Amino acid sequence: MKKRGSKKSDKKVILFPNLVQRSLEKGLEYLQNKKYGPAVGLFEETLSYSPDNRDVYIGLLLAYYESGMLEKAKKTAKEMLAKGIGDYFDTVELYLMILVQLKEYDEMSATISALFDEQEIPYEKREHFFRLLEFANRMKKESPDESYSSEASEENSLQLLGTKDMNKLVLTIAELADKNARLYIDEIKEYLCYAGGHPFLKTMLLSILREQEYDRELVIHKFAKETTVIPAHLAAPDENEQKLEIEKMLKNRLENENPVLFSQIKGLLERQMFLLYPFNFTPMDTAVWAGAYHAAGNSFSGGETDFKKMALLYKTEEDELMKAYSFIQELEKISFPII
Image (cartoon, rainbow, N blue to C red; front, top):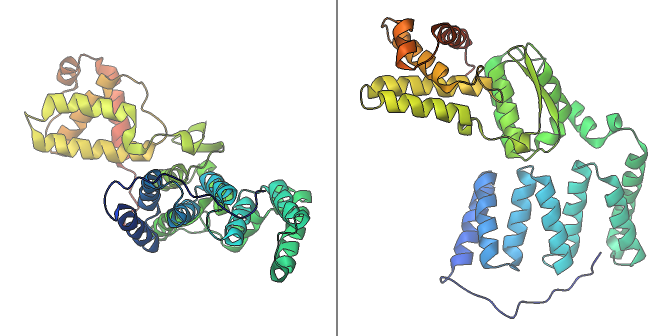
């Protein structure tokens, strides 16, 4: 590990007066208000203006850490240590906390051992680091089931399967956006596989893991279907390609002719795609689903549905359109646990 000490860049380009300071203050405000996503974006942009700025680096590290983007937090901490940016041992301790949450005990042990070998640890911190080294060596020998993450989950269980109050579950899961969801990953995985779990709550959990860049495989069960996904590789629910294609076809057909109906159908499609996520509608034929949603919109608005006419309008098979319509009706029976 590189020792303390940094070299200042010979060239500094200031695009606008006080730009970095204003961005830094806004980023710290985001952090204080737990708006970690916007904080990350702002600090990343500001770092491109001022690549060796100590305060910006610290802000970005904290934003990554608090948002659960641990791999990026780890990389940033290593960069800071290599460049000598910030208080060396404050950064080392945060780096070690990140390694704990990533369960990278080998790296943790090697880092602390190197500090002892280089005699870099101040006398007053030696006992603290020695205990951290003992902890890392002990965790290296233990099974995954006895890991820190599992212990944290047991002590601070989300009670996903033990709580029947849907409103309470929505609040509990929503709060995960401001925490590190990885600490509860075993419980989350269990709920995503549970056939009786509410599809809305499963989408909430999956979306949070995606936003926090969780990059491990997990299995999700919905509507008698099962698939394996890596949340970090998923598109957001509202960016689903099939949903966008269906919406575009409906827009071309209805936006000018009946904008109110189009708006109602668009809202219905968005709600149901959120329930279905990360799965797509089958069959994949866009016209089938556009016609089915058009028919559903007519029905929910109190109008009559002529499936034969709708099939001709969207140039698809009537029986396929009716099957899709039936599935839309089934989805609409699922109550949304919205407070």
